[in-house]
Length: 119
Length: 115
Image (cartoon, rainbow over all chains, first blue to last red; front, side, top):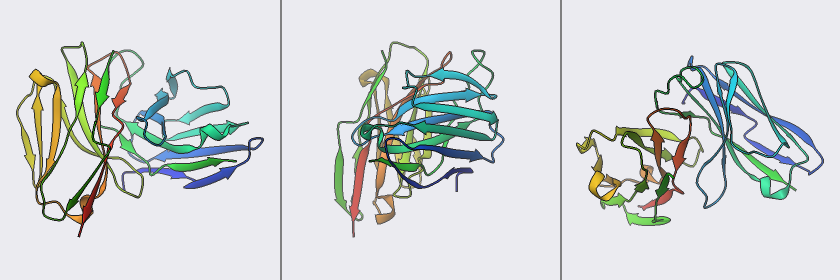
């Protein structure tokens, strides 16, 4: 148990559906991340929020829309996805500082991921 | 540009064998951090170790040991007397010291330990 919880664990959706992935951390961390894990590829950073402010947006298509209402919750809203978006989506958190001021390079705490299949 | 290479896609060993997972990195920074994470079948990546670029001491933690060599830009991970529970995907990662939230991950090495 890493203290980071992701729901749902599995999601199958059609290309015209709208769905959301949820992440919750109980560690008091102030930075949260979305990563995409595809087979035989490095983990791909999608978004980073530090103290509820988006500090990194790694050229992700607009069909992925993140939301961070508070430092404990992170969402990834999905709409009109493509089959190539099928992957494991991992949420992580870390005790980071404010935007641009300081990075501690602390370890990341990951959730178990949402295995997404787009049909 | 920063890059992490894990050339071993998959390794299979028999229980109690020793196994070394290779990690080679590229960076122009003088200060950086290296990490190893384990991803068991349950999916979550679990932190194993962090090393900063100024600390080249090797580290041992139980059956795990890490060999950091700046001269060859390598940060290899050895499991001694492997066990079935060690079966997982192992990721090496690189991070800059400041100015970014990015971790650069390798593609991972899948380790299968057979009973």
